[in-house]
Length: 101
Image 1 (cartoon, rainbow, N blue to C red):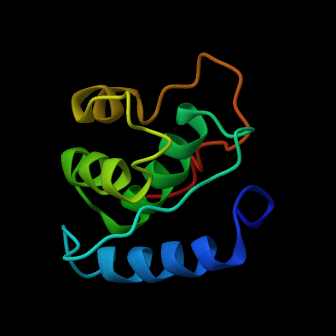
Image 2: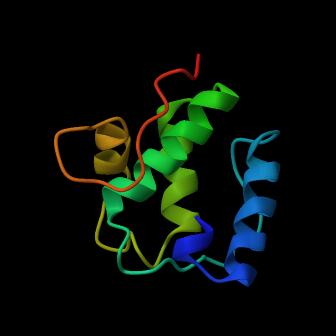
Image 3: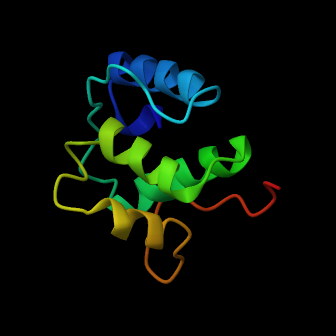
């Protein structure tokens, strides 16, 4: 992700991920911004990998991503994010980690 966001946003993202690893929701979020090279599918793949690694439900992961990446996903519904998190039928930069159990 460092190639697609500022160091400040990356640090905040890491903090949010650490909080998410122990809680389904975060209390206070200041959304992070990513470079326009990343599409919504890339962001959903990134967060699916995280949610899957932590054993989180898709709806919790979709809500998390919608709040953390609010700028990039402003036009995408949580239900759409939830449904398309593991979608692989388009061009994307961030791949799903299928080895995550």
